[in-house]
Length: 218
Image (cartoon, rainbow, N blue to C red; front, side):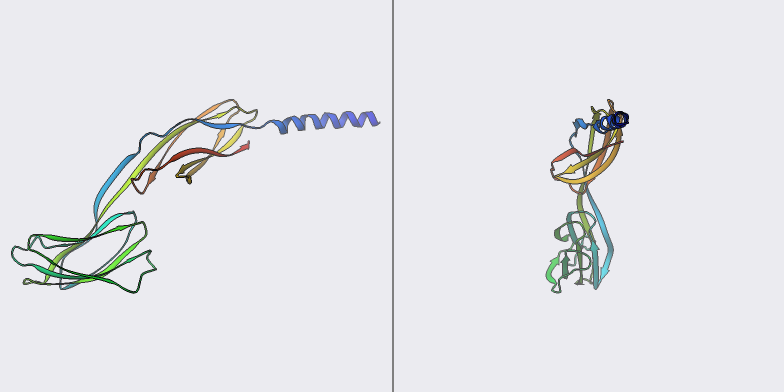
């Protein structure tokens, strides 16, 4: 009876230990990240047209870049315009300093005047202005944005050299921070080509990396 129990336990335990030893071994190889494709752009984010007397503005950025308040008097042939601007640059939509900054200047006939700001995503630029001069006390007002995005393409091959099918969790990192992640099934002894792209909201140089952050047995 004792011998019989030993045989049964050995018969059960052996395959279980063997199956537990079977694990995937998935690595990312042939990683290719070609040079980025930059997309600089200049756009008009607010256009109030010709404003007489006074006006207001309020814009929250969606991309980092250089934003400019433009007071355009190019439609005037002879008359200069005096402009007084009160503005606030806020860290976000809900948090604004109580004190405003004031600037006053003259925009000659046929010219325009810009007030430029380097802003990050989510900052708020708001304020008011008044105009005097000429017969209409008017000026054309708009806000421009000089922004840039970049598309980073990448490709790699997942290789499973282990003894079992498995899943690999892949991270695409930008400057050591996770920007994109996905999970893939890779058959034991097989290769899986993968490609993707990431759009960044600037055109600065960064360090990119593809990393297998986790593997799981299927």
